Length: 196
Image 1 (cartoon, rainbow, N blue to C red):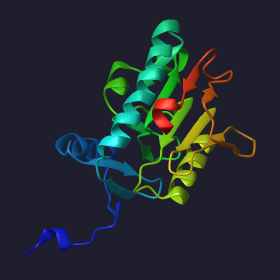
Image 2 (image 1 turned 135 degrees about the horizontal axis):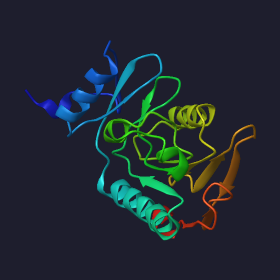
Image 3 (image 1 turned 120 degrees about the vertical axis):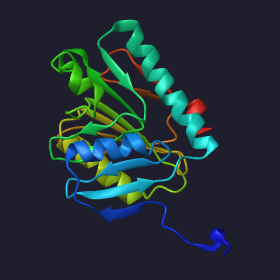
Image 4 (image 1 turned 90 degrees about the vertical axis):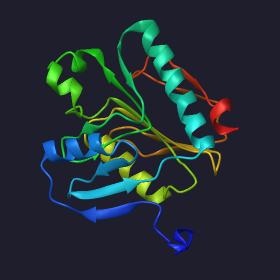
């Protein structure tokens, strides 16, 4: 049988009943797969990214981590980090950051598992297989659960959507840099290596 002929959707969605501990253990035992879980309990199984997206995501995380290391205002995280949002969803933004005072409230056990809070800052980098509609819904979910700033970087359309609480989404066409505003004070993301 030619398995390349099997057409699977870019993201598999399954309704499955798992406790938080069962979900955590499933993710740990299947490290080659990337999972997320919606607030309704729908399990999302996502393929790994291709080389171009992976390289751009590494650049994005590198820049946020570099800024974070210089000032110790918080902790930066890559796309392998799971967050348990207040609405019950388990999400893994491509890049995220948590303010240090919020991080310091977590116990050592909470830091070792999926972090039980919504990051202050989140970034989703659209890959060729990502649905723009689903990414926008995810960005709204982050904001509704406590994120103070979110960027949806859409390289395909050379556009960035900026999400903030209680504000309309701001759309920037062909931006060269992005400001971390008052959430990441002094941080400026260089988009050239990410958008080119």
